[in-house]
Length: 148
Image 1 (cartoon, one colour):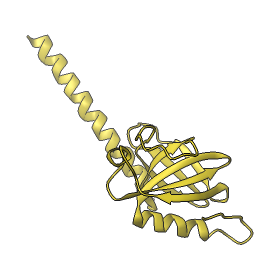
Image 2 (tube, rainbow, N blue to C red):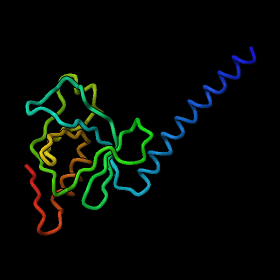
Image 3 (cartoon, rainbow, N blue to C red):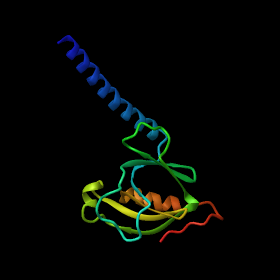
């Protein structure tokens, strides 16, 4: 009986500690500002896939001339993907369709992009999209930026 209570207590403590570390990690990522909720689907087909598969929920952070994308459900402090402003080419924008509406946060817009030859999709709110496109167009003189 004592052993079962001890094991249960340890399991509960580990779960609480894990949740605390998730929250602390997100706080550390967001403390420098310039962050927004952004789902990502990497290496997508040319024809839009509305099945809802492949989306990863994350947080993106502006850092100079690049965007650092972090998975929400990860303990890693390093970004999972880094997108350089000069290498991003916007190919189109659309609203989520079909099962995608369930996989993404409500009111998000899907932006199709090319980054160094890889096709990807970013899903973000209208406000974040406005900021993202403004950030892309605000590239220093001499940098190539392609916004559709």
